[in-house]
Image (tube, rainbow, N blue to C red; front, side):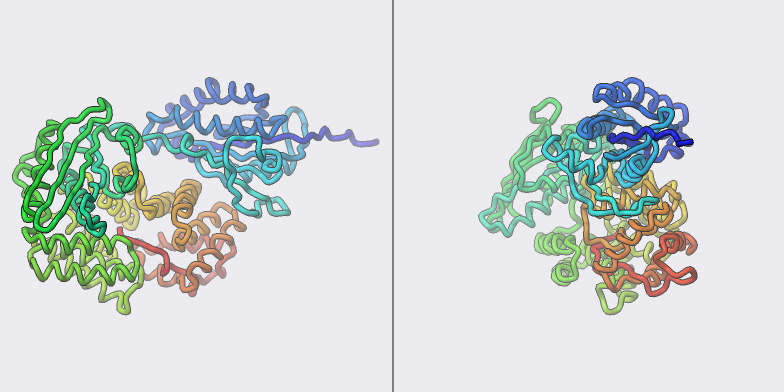
Length: 599
């Protein structure tokens, strides 16, 4: 008797999965399930119907759908991702519902209303490759999309996926700004960003001075607990750009924007500043200062106090007593620190070598300048972390000694406590590091680097769950944060066994910094734990290509884990991917060429 002929068809398959479903349900079961149900009934299912699709089946954390057209399937996927992001905008970052979506065009078998076959399996594997909030499509789907959809598709290469014999061409749908993470909401206290002051001097080389003024005003405002102040790193992304304050306000999640200019000529300086209410569209305060250069510290102090007054911020007793300004009365020493700080921040061995003599000159001019000691200390700690010196242990010890000197010179200087905390972390003195960074945050509640360092210290101390809150706080204070923050976040998720979340953070980091070796190795370990050996091998080989001298044994030795077993989770992931021998991890790659800056 002849077996009944299978009902086969060529369809576009959309596979969707909710990111971190178990964690979200554990955190808030009723709230998560209620929002998920509302998203499905009120938004997602009607959207699928509008695009001539059919929901084949729903699972607790995902869905499988079929469409007669690839264009309809991808257009629907884009609207789902954008719409869910908008609907979740008011939900705390760590509680938001996000989907991954994969779309494939393939041959499937229809049986009792369900779909089976490689076409379905490939869609499911593509969904696993997508970022949270992202979409991946197969090569077969891409071939039918070109020129028919108003969005860009980025080729990610061929990927070997589980249970599929041949590699699959993979493309990422570039959703663009409309599908970016929701803009941050306004904090519950006066919030502002200090844009880089424009250099109005005739000499473009004087840009370091106007940048320094902007940064130091940011630092002084940041120390006021009644304000929410965006980190210098994010504010400076607007340098040299013609921007509307309303756009800055929306993108950074602040109400007020301070902008200004600096003209330095001989021994005179002119500083203009204006505080703008982006919501109302008017000036809250504006002033121009024409002073001797030696009065520049008084100008910074006046601007800070005028802003505090204009925003009607109440200072604490300690804040009223605190001395404002950069901690020196020597304009010459101050200028050397501005130059040295700008060079050191580029994080290369060459610029480090150029920065150090400038910082040493500042200390010679004013031996009591705590910030100069702290900046110099940080260059030595960075040498240790990146193995940029011939004697890394000596570099760490020297950095530690200089940081302790900075704290002794000015106990109220938050940056000194921060740098000392970095040194102590790498010396594996985690309790002392925690105390120093908490002191830094106490003195400067808006210190994004401080919150990131605290998260890092907690991670290495084996308190990964606690580390997430300060890391998210750092990213809110610095929305365009240094890409290494994403590695810190990934480490914490990895330690908690949340490999999908770690993968998402690492892929974002690699997209911003393709030269990172440490993130690629951690990503390979994540893929190993997830059973995605082909992808693990690809990241591993790229890490080795970027840095042939990478050594896991060195990582094992220097990383400051309180419990060495925590690092072995990385080794275990690499072994599961078949990248290491069953009993040995020595001699494998490590960080060296990647640009890594503490914390």
